[in-house]
Length: 262
Ligand code: 6PG
Image (cartoon, rainbow, N blue to C red; front, side, top):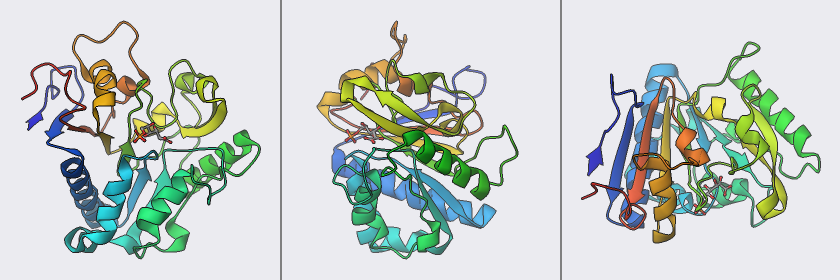
């Protein structure tokens, strides 16, 4: 089921919402999107640059890309460059590490060249230094002049129950960052400092795909996608690729509070 309430002239960016029957159908659809976008990017530009989402929802997507022969063979892994949308302040082998989750579910099981994996150094005790190092990697990889932002071929994002995405949490300083590519971001509610890509980077992508599953996300989905917008729109609602496309993949429980859903 897909709805495209956006489109030219509507004042709403190219935004598509697809509601899938359950978490497995969502993961399969997301993995197919990943593979299709990867092969198109390599055909058109000779390489595929993707920023992976952390959290738990994407794990099954990554596992399918490693295990499903047709999906796995569609992705040009040797031309794929892997980045992350955010990282927790932990070492790469820590159970909370977004890098570790992706390595276990996907990267240790497909032939991405090690030099194509560009993780955020969550182990650095100085988060600002880790964010600066990551921004430099981005500038070098995308050959960015000063003041320009990278254009990822694909950015995968999740949605928190509070409407955060990446590590752009409500009420945090990173929401106001319009110049830097990656920043440390103090999240009082979690008692931790995370590292995250900023809105200009996420909104500079060619394609952004949200992966949202589960009843507990229904309120955040309505706040992010519902019409009219809530008085205090969540950070995820600010994801609107300026020159790209936006796809929300929801399973039925997550879409439960959306108006007009089938
Ligand atoms: C992270 C993610 C975060 C995540 C949401 C949803 O580092 O945790 O970047 O934005 O996508 O919190 O997480 P779940 O998929 O686990 O519900």
